[in-house]
Length: 143
Image (tube, rainbow, N blue to C red; front, side, top):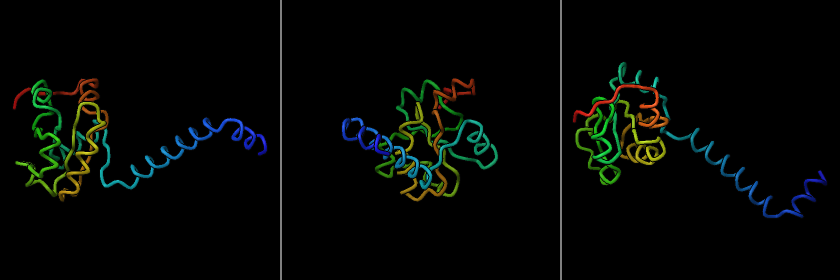
């Protein structure tokens, strides 16, 4: 134990960095565990779409959406979600909602916003459209 204390005393920056990383890891783990928004993989998303009529909300730009998206997806950009301008998605508050972005990183904020607007079952697509395409799953360019 004395070696750890000596190391911490001799290397305060490394010690602070270690505690910062450990705290961040604990925070993100706890936030993900207790979040009402869950991430689903491609298989689970397909099951939700086919068995429970999940609605896909694609938050990418109109150009990205036009280059390929999941069949039946609704294109809503983040500003529309924040302004509660949800269009056709509004009537699906009780259905599962799968939020899709390009890489799966920005979908969490949109999914949390949808949950705050009263959507009960909100999911994000893990890996986003990049993972969907990497797994050779079908995309459409039809609007």
